[in-house]
Image 1 (cartoon, helix red, strand yellow):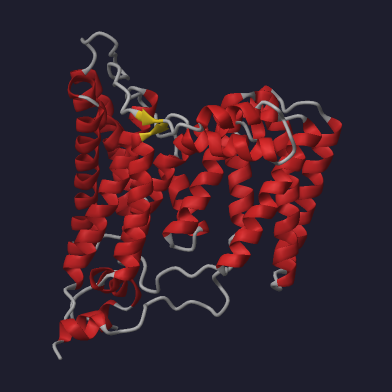
Image 2: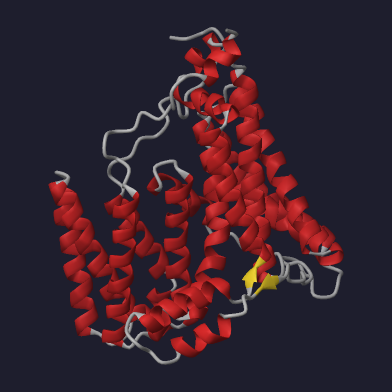
Length: 418
């Protein structure tokens, strides 16, 4: 048997703890319980925007750039390279999408934005894989350089065109969308405000009404990433580079090659996320990413370096972001919903032995309930920060049983295992 073949026969390089993954029945039970809690809060507070089709659609659109950035981080870190330069690569993607998108259409812009993100990933790969630069330093450098480059290019390229300016591009056309035939029927049921039934109609309506083709593409990319990295020999070799690169080297794996592929792919996905953001906003604007690359990293960690849970973390931020964008009055019921979520987190953490985390979750949940009861609305100054606060709280307190790839962030040199 050849050395390359031997790698494909190795067991899954996961290092999972027994019971660290939820079974499908438990996941279904958890999702059903979360939905019923959401419906109850909506009925109790009258916050119809919590489950409206408009909120769900907006949340899905907001989750796409974050999810794609998180997937970019997943590819790099599964190969052992930390990529905190996702924010800069997203910025390159937003500008690249605008550069071609406003003249040649959104899909040409999406391709070019993805290409510029891949170039950013290539720079990171050269620095970290070839020259052994510290991964964090390289990523920070990209995050500093990319906004300056794109702002300069914006002033040179877009300032003299209609709709453009010193810090923005001319408008980009929409990428198109699809609406399923039964969407109108779902909207009718949603308008009845029945407990659970109307809420379910609102959620489903948001998923099937004017669903962007870019969102469809993002869902395909999530599924493709899961299949490639966990169901193919290529994916096994790539993940082995992030777990035990010297062991992989001894079995004939070209570790440098797989790290390069992973980091370039990481940049491409981040660039695609930036392009998706520009398309949804219909133009490029300076500062448009607004930290979404870092939030994608948070979603990656919350998802325990797996694509499905990562998508869930991105969806959580997208949902909370959509609520504050849809209506500031909807943020007040979100306090109660957050308190309930933190209460459930506390119970789970207590049962798993994380007593300190459980107590912290209970204290914060109690403060959220007190805030909800003593006020009628959240101050306007705090509305914009609500999605970030809620996401950080839930991700930080729920993500305690994590396992990053063993060789993540370590400098690799062929034949120099220490």
